[in-house]
Length: 121
Image (tube, rainbow, N blue to C red; front, side, top):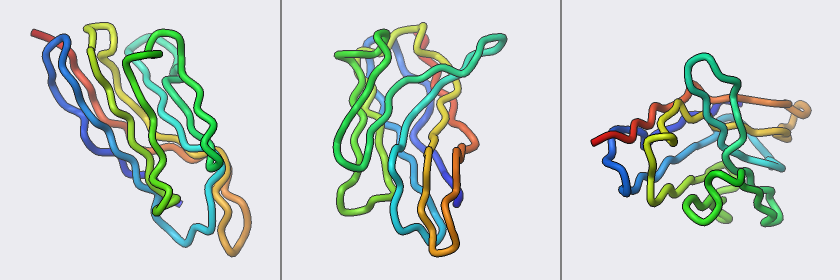
């Protein structure tokens, strides 16, 4: 199972970006897909998660501004719509899956390579 993120970049404060994450490999299902972020010298932190049955969870810092969406047609794709971006949202954003079911077993805790989001004027 591999995760590939895209959509990061430079945006001005108040702007929007949409991140995408696609899981590749022979995957039967994924329970939770989520986004985390990390800045230098700090621990990786939760941004948002979404389960396969539609339950979402957000950190308090992004509630009302970010939206996580699973592609129901493609169980292996998740998006993060980021609106009203602030300088403090600047970080490397990582995609994560908790459990990916494959024909050969369950793959736990997979991470993407990360995509940089910079919010600056």
